Image (cartoon, rainbow, N blue to C red; front, side, top):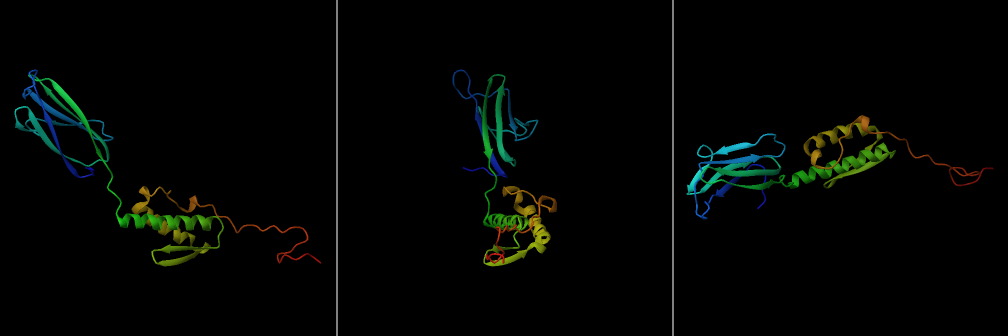
Length: 188
């Protein structure tokens, strides 16, 4: 089962004595180490941990941070035991709208790079619509790119762009061979 941010996990533990029979420790705790956290969230019986039967305890915790959430149950006193585990919280899957945003962002990025490389005109297709941009519209394109980047850029793998990111190049230089003009004919 995939676990996404906002999922409530039902953590359970069972304690047994040396005779392998269910037994209650004097104190029961669970520590939850969330990704990037310095300190653990601590749950204790009977405040935030419930008991279902002799030796069996649970707590329900909403996990909100993507990554490895490590937990450790511990019983002390008449039963000394501990167990550890990991729950991996995955990022929410992309929706079709998210993918459309990334597709538009990619098309804009390619067009901006094309204009920056010296192309006089680039065409961008958005779904069934095609738009033509020229060198003069580069600043407008950057504004559109930044707006889309704010919505979906961090997950796109594309870099943020602004005017200082673009090196403008002129049209490619055509070098004519000796004795030729631009029509391909020789000089007279």
